[in-house]
Image 1 (tube, rainbow, N blue to C red):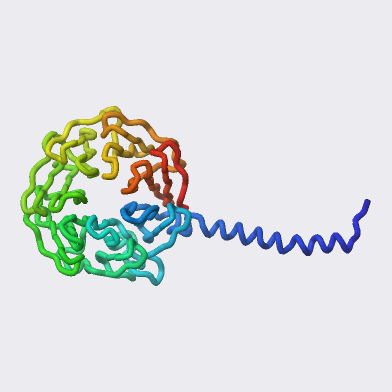
Image 2: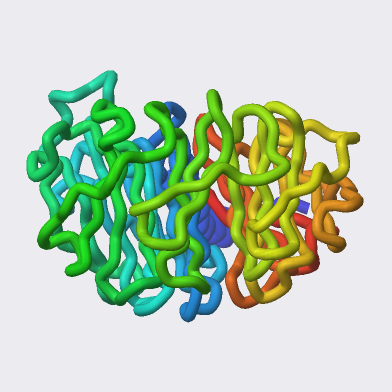
Length: 352
């Protein structure tokens, strides 16, 4: 039976707005894709789950600094975007004060492939509201060389911060006691080439530094004196401190200390890891990367099992300081983040 032409026209008029709404939803979905997070060329430099701020995560990337305070349901670009602080810079290191947890630092420098893009000032930036807002506290011009490689927030005071200037070799360690307002050069580092610096959040004065060419070292007096880690052989390229347990990944495999770093022993040698992460709330639980998958251990590295599948190859890890069963894995090109809340049994995409 042929329908009423008037009714047919009415239906078409009613469906047109619905089609428009559907189109807008599709376009909105496109806007929430990787283009919203720096595009296909963006990649993650650092990933930090913040202590004292449940479900809060910072993603420092080549193009932008992103923040979620609800476990990844919603995100905001808090720095690095057009008109923001750090505009046109890459943000490549994050550090949270273990003394004043609302205080977070970000290290920002040139994008090597596009220095002309830099509108913000190269430097160390500070947030006193767990990453919501930022201010410049140290321009990199304050150091003898602007090629600052990494930063770490110490447990000595609310304003203690360390920075490494690699071009100065062993003389490249600097310390600030006033949140980056002033800096002093520390005694020589234990090696000319340093690849990382980790502050022990539970012990004032304790720092770990590591080198892919010479190994792992610690200090208990803010860098005045250093000693080589006992039991660790070869270069080291990732360290995680979790209360009295210290994990170190290097050329010769995974090493674990159960006595605060006094001595190390080789852990499981079945899998070659590229990075390790752990939290003090349960120091027996650690996560590690192989370059293509995430593994988890519940017995301080004695045994490991591969976690559930992740849609993208992970390149960075961070563990929630309040929950050892909650961890985040970041991927690059374009950037993406997955989260687990059950110790790695299942992962879900939270970015984009």
